Every structure is written in structure tokens, then in C-alpha cells.
Image (cartoon, rainbow, N blue to C red; front, side, top):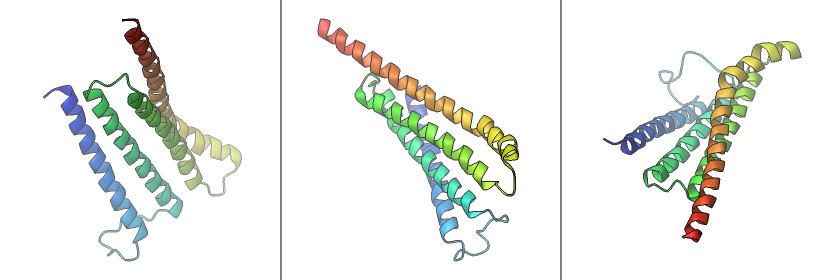
Length: 163
């Protein structure tokens, strides 16, 4: 099995698993009064946590969908195209938004009666370091990749015109 097919299979598996988890979480959150107690979890979470988790899963599902499209571009050897530039730029923007959502939602969810210094030191900084910065790094990487594809496309078009 070549790497392109393996990449596609792994992305498909991950995409469908995350999509099913997203659907399950939406159903559990929306119909929590209707669903029998067997399906409910033992812990009860705040509504802001539930909503932010659903938003996180929706963004993750959409990012994986974009990854699948980007993977098909890679497999078809269309790296130096406007479509590759657009998809990689979308993935970068979505990862940066996801990082912001994660940090803010986890910080807002834990706000009780803490003062500003406690919020920054015990909530915001750890969430930013552990969860936010990796998302920002991946997002900026894809934005740089998009810029590199744009420059490569310009060089390719210039090279095609000189021949």
C-alpha cells in the first residue's frame, strides 16, 4: 500500500469517528431529558462546557473534512494549484480559530469567584500553553504552507511562460 492510500484511509477513519462523536454529543446535549438514564454520563457538565465542546467537535470535523480534500489534492499531484493554496489557507485559519475557541472556552467555563490574577495564572496560561499554542503552531504552519504554494505556483507559471 502506498503512502497516499494509507493517508486517505487514516484520514477517512479519523473523519468518520469524529463526525460520529459530534453527532452523539449533539444528541446527548439536546435530548438530555428524553434519553434514558443509561445513555447519560455519570458527571454533569455546565452548559457552557457542553456548547464549547460541541463547537470544538464541529470545528474539528470541518478541519478533517478540509484535510481530506487537501489529501486528495496531494494524491492527485495538484500541489501547485489555486485549490491547494485555498485549502491549506482554510486549514490554517480554522486551526487558529480552534486554538482561540479552546483557550477561551476552557477559561470561561472555570470562572467562579476568582480574581483577575488567579484567572490568568491558573486558567488562561495553562490552557494557552497546553492546548492553544499547538493549535496556533499547526495553523501558522498551514498558512506558511499556503504562502509557499502561492510562490511556487507563481514560479511554475513564470517557468511555463518562458519555455
